[in-house]
Length: 132
Image (cartoon, rainbow, N blue to C red):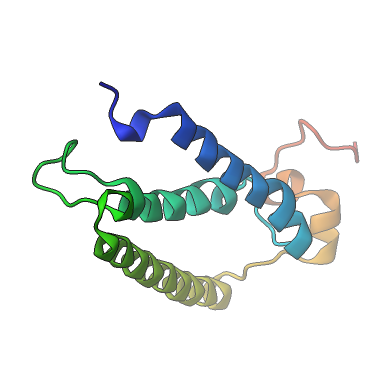
């Protein structure tokens, strides 16, 4: 018997959700996420936490709880509340840390440094510069 977490259909589902956020949502909103960390890890984690409340089953973890699809809608609401608290906490702490870094070091380089490229101006690397 294959555990529910390794069900290929669920893996395809999360892949489609993450791809949608990377390919559609990010360009639509125009936020800067070069490595797609939010679209893949953030959204994938949110979906995983919510999916636990949907597909959790005592047949896999006898000391756990059944999820919504196994007759326990309360577990989904527990997962949803925990996910929301985590999102709010992560947003607030990230905002505080970004403000602190901005005050101490600054978050942006000037326009000339950005035009020249951060490899050259910040890291003194010139392997891929077009300005040589």
